[in-house]
Image (cartoon, rainbow, N blue to C red):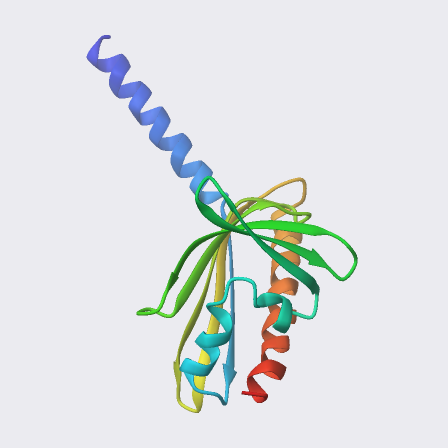
Length: 162
């Protein structure tokens, strides 16, 4: 392959990759809690405990797929989410997962929930990166933000009991 053609193809591939990255959406929600980070992490690190603190989740079922831990969440209205645990790191108090199937207008979704110190106790930061699918970026961001807002509010109730 001639050098100029190879360089042109590499430049085109780089441009395409950068354009695809630019299309990725980000969501970040943060909430402070009066509990200790250890108390919050004890609740969050259990991959299926989301059904105890997120008001939109009716049930959670754990399974394995190709050696990975997978949870199937059923919402209060019967929708299903299938999510794969990427990591639960006790040192960084961060749980990372990706969505395999969901009704949300997203694809290539990877999310982390991090517990850390705050002036008055702890903070929980829920972040994600994804590509919108079948909806505008604004609509996809709103859908994910709504999920996070409800979940972080629900976590307040559980942490007050610990």
